Length: 320
Ligand code: UDP
Ligand code: MG
Image 1 (cartoon, helix red, strand yellow):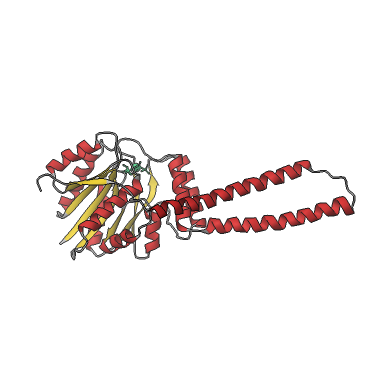
Image 2: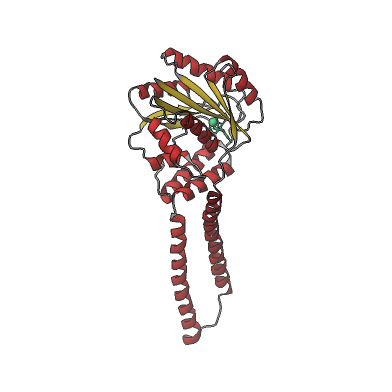
């Protein structure tokens, strides 16, 4: 038996769920693939998402709802879905795969079906690459480019550009990713850690969101950027040390030069502004690097506590 799990995280997606479910079922039916499960992770939605999912579930018993106790964020929602699938298949000897999708129709169902077919042809890891995103303007593109530049310069894992969380992982990859038990999670990075060499990549144009609005804003992206760098590298710490050494050497020369010019050359002692600007510069540098160190220590603090990543309950069809 071969089974596909669709993991779909939803935060306030009431207006997208019906059309998504219908389209997926239609497409799967058209290729005669009936052994699937739609795992919806309700990430603490404030609208009618949960009620709607329960309604859909009454008509379709291949729907499972993972109801998070509050909003934990997209990455954690995907983790909850993945854990569920792994738990269901702890000793499974059948083949299975997971497809991660967004609920807002920005990840077209027909591409998900293409993934299913490729998987049947023995592809084990299928990723997608956005060639364009009809939903995002210039500002987002600029932020996106900067994000990837910083990430790939500073981080130890190389993360390919424009690869959304729309992907298929075969059993082996599901178990590998599931074995990474860090609290701080970023799927893109974790996948790179596991290895992307054998991935098959499908390019696609992301259409506009069907309904509702995007949950990502500047602060989310900022957090994602910091997280991505710090989780996968200690390079920023090394850069801090490097600047520290450089600053030291510079200040020794500066001191030597001032002693020389005022005591040996007897030039008048001026340069209050120079002194001030040098001081402000170095003080800000120190604060900046203390911030970086703080980010790492904060993460150690969180990681050491080793709290559960989320709390949820799994709602299955009552008929079972
Ligand atoms: N999402 C989630 N939890 C959150 C924010 C978003 O599960 O806290 C889901 C959301 O419902 C959608 C997916 O993650 O299915 C991507 O979110 P969104 O469309 O807001 O991001 P964008 O496509 O703009 O990057
Ligand atoms: Mg979206």
